[in-house]
Amino acid sequence: MALTLCIMAALVASPAGQTRWKHGPKFGPGYFPIAVWLQNPANAERFQRAGINLYIGLWQGPTEEQLAALTRARMPVICEQNAVGLAHRDDPIIVGWMHQDEPDNAQPVTDASGQQSWGPCVPPEKIVAEYGRLRANDPTRPILLNLGQGVINDTWVGRGSGAKLSDYETYVKGGDIVSFDVYPIAGLDKPKPIDYMWYVGAGVERLRGWAGDSRTVWNCLECTRISNGVRKATPEQVRSQAWMGIIHGSRGLIYFVHEFKPAFNESALLDDPPMLRAVTELNAEITRLAPVINSPDLNVNIRVPGAQPSERPAVAAVGKQVGDATYLFAVGMRNADTRAVLTLPQLANRAVVEVIGENRTLPIRNGSIEDTFAPYAVHLYRVQR
Image 1 (spheres, helix red, strand yellow):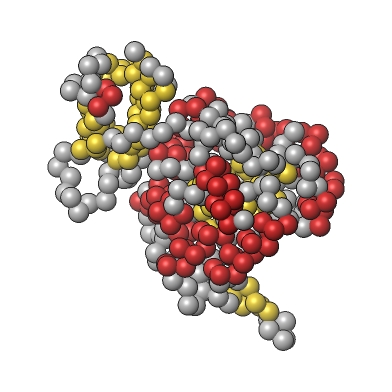
Image 2 (image 1 turned 120 degrees about the vertical axis):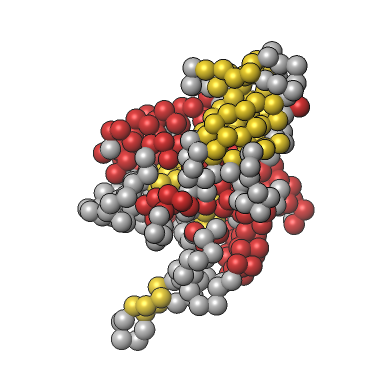
């Protein structure tokens, strides 16, 4: 049984494989999960038009009504494993099960007098045990575990007493798909939040290190003011965070589209035309490039003139080869302009590289290209033989 589970988990983690969970997402070379968190099924068709292809979470559900609405909209869902969900074991609309959200954060507790306070996080061993129960009930679907900002924010105090970084080495054993959320612009309590956008990519990298090759890593994205009522990521920053995750190895994105201040709006993205337009374009870009994203990684040598070895990386990049085309995806990891030299052996003997979507080309010299990155800028390069 243990061997079977390990094999199934490895297949989920390998986008190139053809065998999948019997009732799981339709993983394959051309599929990249782009999800939305805890939304009303009544809006499924509107989210589909924005390029969303998956729902995650259903408020106090799943209910029969919610599943019926998602079926009409042909929107698959990963949801909690309640009695209604288990009654739909053979229903293809459910493609995965999920734990409670952010068990690594402090949990609310109520004393005998009814006063509420914050207690410790859920012990990681409990999450692993719960994974075993969910798996025993239905081994045909993957289980999603979404963790909080403690994955990367080492100064975060919201994990409660007794929590430690090494807990995550156990938490990740409680899921087949492991995700995390950090919202640098709208969600961080920092003097200058924009200086911490690199948390997204570094968090994916850290989570992949804990999860290993047998589990798939996803990450969440911000696109509203969430709870601060003032700050909101720009469309360019949302795109940067998305590609930052992908370049560091994320293989699924989850949009958090709620807004709690200045007023509650469950689907605030749908009421923000400029952001909705930008997110729709971003999702279309990622979907077009899904076969490339899901192909094996090629290591890129990155040199930033004048950078010190002890400095945090200023640029992150990954290479891809699909047929005769070589791709190089790169993103700035600092809130500053950066000049970088990117070297990939597959670029040798090529003359120019196209910068996708920017209407420009760059010369290739000795297998290298040199380009300037504005703060957190994304550049996607392609060379077609």
